Amino acid sequence: MALVVAFLVGTQVRSPWESAIANSHADPLVTAEVTTRSLGPRTTPVTGRVRLGTDQTVLAMGTDPQVVTGVQHGAGELLMPGQVLATVSGRPVIALDLPFPLYRDVLPGDEGDDVRVLQQALAALGFYTGTVDGRYGEGTARAIEALYAGAGASAPSPSAEADALVAAAEDAVAEALAAESTSSSDTGAPDGPTAAAVSARAVADARTDLTEARFAALTPLPMSEVTRVGAEGATVLTVAGVGTVLGEDPLATLRSGSPSVTARVDAAQVTAFEIGSTVQTTKVGDPGVAHEATVVAIGEFDTGGGDEGALPGRDITLSLDDATGLEDGSDILVTATGTAPAVEGLSVPVVALREDAGSTFVLRDAGGDGSGNSSAIGPEDRVDVDVLATNDGYAIVDAADLREGDRVVVSGSR
Image 1 (cartoon, rainbow, N blue to C red):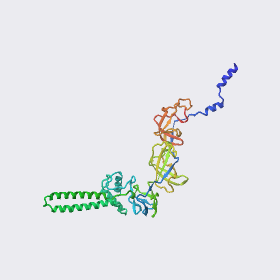
Image 2 (cartoon, rainbow, N blue to C red):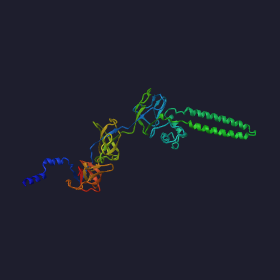
Image 3 (cartoon, rainbow, N blue to C red):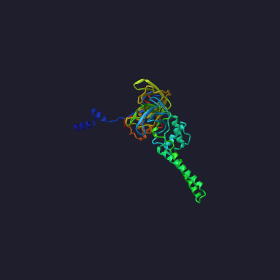
Image 4 (cartoon, one colour):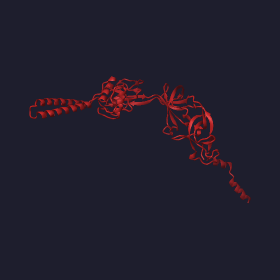
């Protein structure tokens, strides 16, 4: 009997070794109490990347061979709308402020968005005063001629076929007028009035054909003679030298836009940055290269990932007035320098904050004591919060459904 009792007792007793094995598979729940505290602004730097502008490659287009015969704007110079970048095979490449590059030669009678933006660009330079209607007519052709004259270049010529049609139409008008004159002198003949009417109609038709031929022969705009820049121009980074025979190599590389910095920040950091606020930047590895920047945009929440394995958070964009000592793609430290007052309110540890595509939230412990004996966490325990400030590992939050003394989940699960 004693042996039986001893066996039963032994089956109910767990050794320390057995307890350790069981606990090694557990995911303990760690919670923290919601308290009231006051936090000052956070100044921990975040890492961003410099972009000195948007680079654009200018390719030579047109018939072969493409030979650089002149360079009007060299490397380091600012190319403005209406100016000539270079001449290729004797023809200019003129900069225009266009939202997209021309995708066809623009000819008289053409209609479309490309004609509309072309008219807008010419109007901005003071060359076009007509209605911006997206139709290439006489007013647009005259503006193109003024553009070339202003750039010190000869305007493009119509095609040989268009010129031939004009010449043929002019001859037809002359012949019709001569026939009309002859028929008018024979009005005494029985069929004289009928012949005169026929001649008059022939003259009218010939003049109509001439008008149409002259319209078709208005000044065109080859897309090979236009490159795109912004209203503030673009800096020439590289340009092929005179005598270069262009193949697949570009004619030039341009950079437009202002220097900027983009940095990814999480919910605990974004409150330190406000649009319009000034921040301090220092180059990673060279703290002597320091500049002030201005916060100009704060993006929507991004779940992260991608090719570079970005962390979840929001992208802040900064404008740099001075980029001395910085290269395109440089890593840079960004530190908020504002003197915002301390914020007081409900606080939770920063590590308790969670994010998804729509908002920032915490998980409230359903049991409330963090002992691991409370009921499982369910959807009702998600509490959306607005982060007002972060510092020293804590965040001040605004949440209608959160109270002082509540417990929020820091890590683990039930």
